[in-house]
Image 1 (cartoon, rainbow, N blue to C red):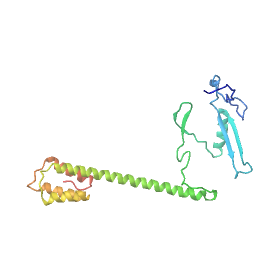
Image 2: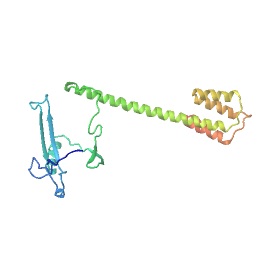
Image 3: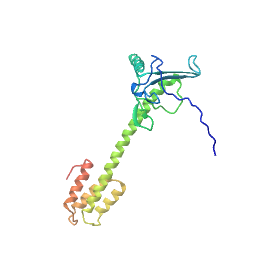
Image 4: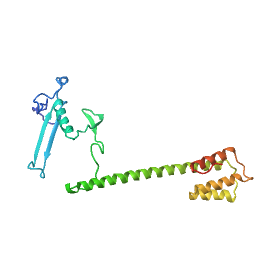
Length: 219
């Protein structure tokens, strides 16, 4: 059995703006247990800073004063990013950082200040290579999808002719196994022209469908 006791605990119940010394709370928050409408400007300095080692600076801003700081930054050519909200959790919104807008994904290496520009240029080259690779992969996927469709159409056309074992149909089967779809199409077309082979009207429709996909002249 546990023995417990009640102890007082400090909790944050509000925020005072460090710029105008007014409450950060909105009038609509007067009955709330916490001040949600406030901004925070903070910085933690380390060993390589200019005489600020192990110093943490922070100030809280009301909405109006935060707007002044934001306007000062933008007026000097800077920007304050608006992080995209992706949903709303149990107690607060969920924010999502967007690549190339809120952050840049660099190669997995330690970047020293004097090679930053070099790394950034290399990063741009890597991004271009990734885009080229993605484009080539898409083209390859489209080609594979096209040949799968051609093979399916040829199989449908083969079903529209009577099964006659002759050199032409044997060539068709061989070319199909080897992935030589154009030669397989020619062999199947020749088989369809034989007087001894029974074929339906759909056979020539399927042949033309395959020819169209392969950019060959139609019958």
